[in-house]
Length: 193
Figure 1 (cartoon, helix red, strand yellow):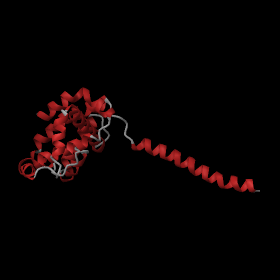
Figure 2 (cartoon, helix red, strand yellow; figure 1 turned 180 degrees about the horizontal axis):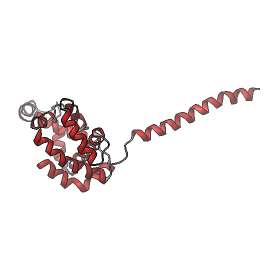
Figure 3 (tube, rainbow, N blue to C red; figure 1 turned 135 degrees about the vertical axis):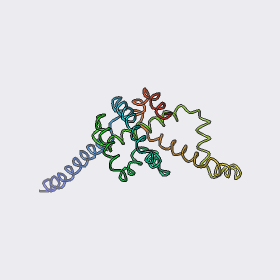
Figure 4 (cartoon, rainbow, N blue to C red; figure 1 turned 90 degrees about the vertical axis):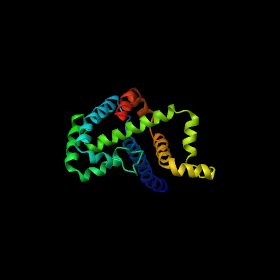
């Protein structure tokens, strides 16, 4: 009788443990995005070239798409809310991203976020250590007050952007960076246009 009681109490615990283990493995796998593929990177680049037409047709949109409080870990996604003001642009963008193999704007923006963050991470990796240290020190409140005032006056916004870039770069996966690396030249050329 004692053995039956022990087995009866152990079975629910074992079942719960197995269920929890299986569920956590499934949800962990779902939560982690698969690494970018070269096809996704190329499709994003190609789609960006097509979105330049939208910039030309809606010049006021360009300023709104780069908000001051942009989340550098989600540089594309964090600016998509502005499209709510421009339903015709949203519709056109939806057509463009679907032509390039994306399911919708959200998927395109997510891939774009990862491409841009990986590009920033590659740039940071190539940065000389002294330059990275200088950028990181700009955020240091313990620096010389005179130097701190200079930073506040002329360079505070640039310093903030650079710190945000460093922080965002730290979120890029090595796999995504390797998928983006062959396309760095194309991405940089797009940024210069």
